Length: 219
Image (cartoon, rainbow, N blue to C red):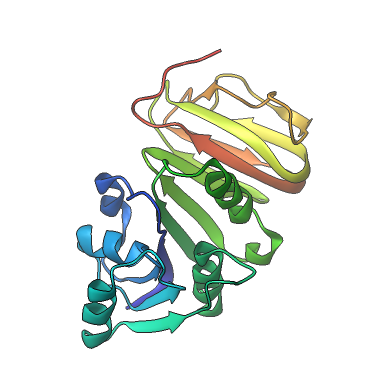
């Protein structure tokens, strides 16, 4: 297996089954708590499972451990979510890219913490992408080139502070050195004008959110 891409499967609601198609064949897989069950359902071989395992089936955990999966147990009363612990474990393995597979239902606070966590400065050396249900999200620092379908929705949201000097090429509503502020809707509901979009910024971090196949244009 390669350290090029490490996949982290979150607990909670199961990921969209089609997200497994984005997993490289040689990717190493880390599961967060009941993400262990989700990974098995997606046909993924889990190398490490991390968490307090308050929601994963004990039978599945035992089966995984018997099959060679490393089980990293943490107390229920802890200072980080299971997903954060799994992302930290992935970071320790030195990947170029981390791909998170997660569901989009369940608790709103968990969903918001996941989105904010993706843009943490702790992971700035790693390219981070996520499938959250049918939505795709990409952390943008410096520059990212994204492939999409013409007319596909994409929103650019600033995380953890202003995103300064934002420039886009290949989107219907271009940005040319602008600042996007956290809490602003300025970057919401843009569109791919071509199959390739280039997004760059001078300072800060953006989350590029692609709402997925069921999303409408909205406001």
